[in-house]
Length: 351
Ligand SMILES: Cc1cc2nc3c(=O)[nH]c(=O)nc-3n(C[C@H](O)[C@H](O)[C@H](O)COP(=O)(O)O)c2cc1C
Image: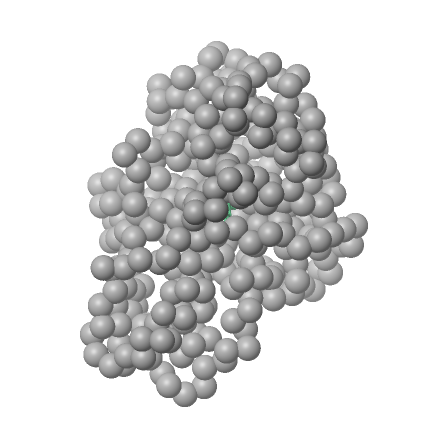
């Protein structure tokens, strides 16, 4: 097979979204013949998984995002997906995704290739412009019927309270906070890091960036909410208030295949929105509740934090129709005030 095309395909596909930009994937590629190749995807399970993804559901969504991107980039280059099989194992982390692609030399549509670099997580401010409902209906139409897209604009206040409370939890729990500090890096000092979140992609003001650097380099920790008031306002309250729409993509079954397909649908939707110059930011705070209920003794939460997670599990269910114990992801969409910086990627290595 034309190795230049395969290299081009992988170089663009690595720009798929992934939780915390961890890119926890491992690919095996096999050329079956000149017109067909097979890919096997597995999750790179960390030695000690983070509390924010203790069971690997975030990593499952992420390999769904990668698969959707491989399919979409492949389509532009004449590589058509002909097989997709999810091999479920006892542990979610051991799931395997088997893919096959046929190489059709005629009619590749390379004009859409720019979408894959243009798709980014926009955490900065969005304009006041509302997205036209016809645009949104097209996106609804793209969805796999297994998933429901809940429109939450009329429940914005509840959504903001939920994201605020769970973000405070991430900032005031020592383990969760140190995981966050480890994910974020300062581009200038760490040019070689090809995973993780560069500080300048977080959409923070210069003052908050300075405060963050101070905390990171001095390993500081503030358990009181008051210290985080400004950053919560900037990273949760303003963004969720000033965007066109808020959605929750909800799946029905808590199994590997459903988490994976949620990731695929989410990335399909994100790419379709990118083509319309609509931008998106996920808020995967629901995963904190999922992980807590999967094993209540896993995290060193004190009583107040446990009560808060239990309260939100119930309220999201009753008020917003969200089931946090099943696959799902919350996100906001709109038009950006300015472009978002590109975050780094490691090579899509394969064996
Ligand atoms: C499962 C999953 C969860 C994510 N959760 C969040 C989140 O809670 N907040 C956020 O700002 N971005 C979130 N993201 C976006 C990733 O951080 C982002 O895709 C990654 O850093 C790569 O950057 P890019 O999307 O700009 O290419 C999430 C993405 C995925 C796939």
